[in-house]
Amino acid sequence: MLSYQFDWSVVTTGKYFEWLVSGLGLTLQLSAAGIVLSFLLGLLIAVLRMSHFGPLRWFAHVYLEFFRNTPLLVQIFFWYFGSYKLLPMAVNEWLNSTNFEFAAALIALTIYTSAFIAEDIRSGVLSIPKEQMEAARSAGFSYIRSMQYIILPQAVRITVPPLINQFLNLAKNSSLAMTIGVMELTYQARQVESYTFKGFEAFTAATLVYLVLSVVITALMDQYNNRVLNPQRG
Amino acid sequence: MDGLFDFQVITNNFTYFMVGRYPEGPLGGLGLTLYLAAVSCILSFFGGLILGLLSLSRHAAIRYPVNLFINTFRGMPLLMVIFWMYFLLPALLGKTVPESRTVIMGLTIFTSAYMSQIVIAGIKGIPKGQTEAAISTGLKPWQAMVYVVLPQGLRNMIPSFVNQFVSLIKDTSLAFIVGVSELTHVATQVNNRTMSSPTEIFIFIAVVYFLICYAFTTLSRWLEGRLAWRKAI
Image (cartoon, helix red, strand yellow):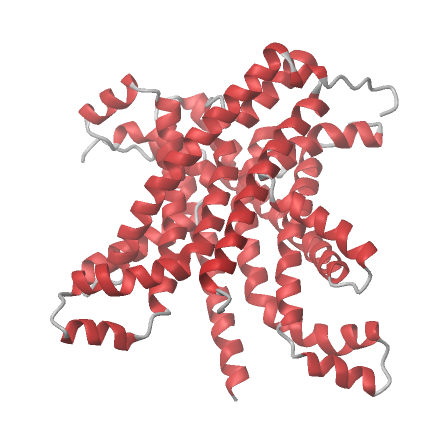
């Protein structure tokens, strides 16, 4: 290590700095889109999982178990290399006309994370006393409306901390998109390393960015825990 | 559906998927995946135990650096940890390190950080009165931990450890990135060579991973139920 010459200017200025910044931009885009989509999909799957209609419940169960027990990397490869045989021609054409690497990574991240989110939401909902649902139904709300107005608003509140944790995982997992050529942060760090041989600097920069991301998100979560879950009563 | 899928590529390469070139060559495929996961799991059990105990230390001088270490690795993507190992280990050791060992190191450090959280939760789940009672019978604090708290705590941690092992099996797929020929890498190799059936190949290995992980997930749930039942009586 002693013979190694540190040169931090490589990653703080110039072209390579711009690469890292553009990588961060793509990581944030992928994470933001993934968070929104996986939350919506996870919510849907959680509702299906609790449905009174057998086949829907069964479908959601299989979905959850399958996508949670398969590596994300394999899912990314499946969507990137193998999905064309399963998708209709029109969808394939549309996907190829867009940024397909990005789309495949986003689809895989969304589906993978939605399975975890659905389980978190379900345990949130199960933690709401059954009487709430019974009371809502006897007050004349339909099942869907009881969920919408009575159960979910409470459950979502309890579910926020584990959800934020999943979002954090999603942001970190988005690094796997580099394997199919999405030029996100980890990809760019690798790229800077191979162009400059300044691996130490490049990986330190990328690591720090990930750490800042997770510190910020964790701090937000603590804030939420203090304000909403354990509010100090005056 | 006729002609849509052709699983011939799987049957033709089945042994290659399962064990790589073993026994003529090195172990690969699913065998290597399980080997990487098992070795990393055992190592990170001890790593997590040590980190967890240290982070519960009464001395701030131990607690803070250990927590910093744990939180740093929990805040990093695993891929990043593997890259760090990939070029730091040779620099630190002054010699080349086999890729599989790099991956085991990366997986171990990363998983130890997560395991430590299980250990901390397990220890905190044991009522404080136990430690107090142990100390008042004359045991030293470390003896109270080793002989009284840990044996009870560890039993409660078993289901979480099994879940962590499932994560490890899935995480070994990242060994692909440094060229270790575990199951995912073998799949990309076969895919590159045959060029005709990526759908079949990736569905096949997804199902293989699923069967193994699901078996362990089920085991973990069963253990959890049994522990709850034991506590109830």
